[in-house]
Image (tube, rainbow, N blue to C red; front, side):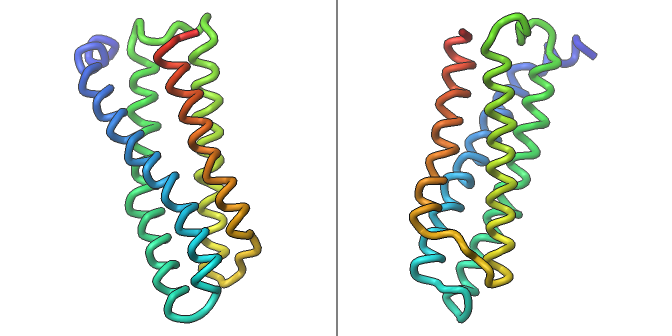
Length: 149
């Protein structure tokens, strides 16, 4: 099995990067949709319905599959012999950040469902601040992997 992973490494790495880019794009965009939904769409009516549909499709058609692909290809990379030195700090900071990113993803899904029920209680300002969470996590992940501290 490890021979197959070693041979597939460049392909798996490329697919992992593509998946991460897709996931990050959705994680950046969904909170922005929530800002506009909160400030301009309200919780009922045709504008609300359009925002709810856009949020649902972004979350289910792009964000969720991209997260699953990111995790799948990432774990394949982890199991490829010689790729991860678990005695270093970087794999642990990356792993913690990816888990936190998954938690943020889950929070967004919970918020999306609240919008769909017409029960949003979070302000546009709060969504703007939360929109920085994936940026901070991305910075930690990139430095972890590239610098390998």
